[in-house]
Image (cartoon, rainbow, N blue to C red):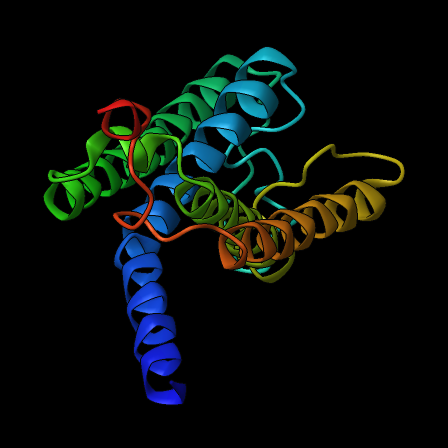
Amino acid sequence: MAARVSRTAHRSGARRAQIALPGTVLGFGLGGFVDGILLHQILQWHHMLSSAGSDTIGLRPYPPDTVPGLRMNTVWDGVFHVVVWLAVLVGLALLYSRVTEARGRVWGSRALWGWVLVGWGLFNLVEGVVDHHVLGIHHVRPGPHQLWWDLGFLALGVLLAVGGWLLQRGAVPVGTAPSAEEARR
């Protein structure tokens, strides 16, 4: 009996882990899109190099309120979007390759969306630590209280990662629960 429970638990963990990498990569890319579209473009709180000149790696300043500075920031915002776009494509390709047998169940799976939240949280943590604190090339909202905005961005990353981890832990492994259509048969 104990061996059967152990094998079942092992299989469940293995199935949940099967979509961990695709979900995390997909969430990383989607988190990057939220950052790039919402904070860079719509709210215009910062651009990729908007704090250059006061950064920690010695870049020359590219103030986004000048035409040459805005052009350079726009180019680097584009490079940033290419990276997160590739992360989304890689995440989708990995997901498709791993779940073609149970597509309908995967998209409704708490495990997938938990891993997506983990990836989004990791994006915030990597972006926040590297670009905001280590390199200092931009901040969430430059100016007074910028440290609090940067710390809030990191705190949101921790909440997303932990919440996603907890969500995927309690999920029914993909492939064990019958789909609604299968249950009706």
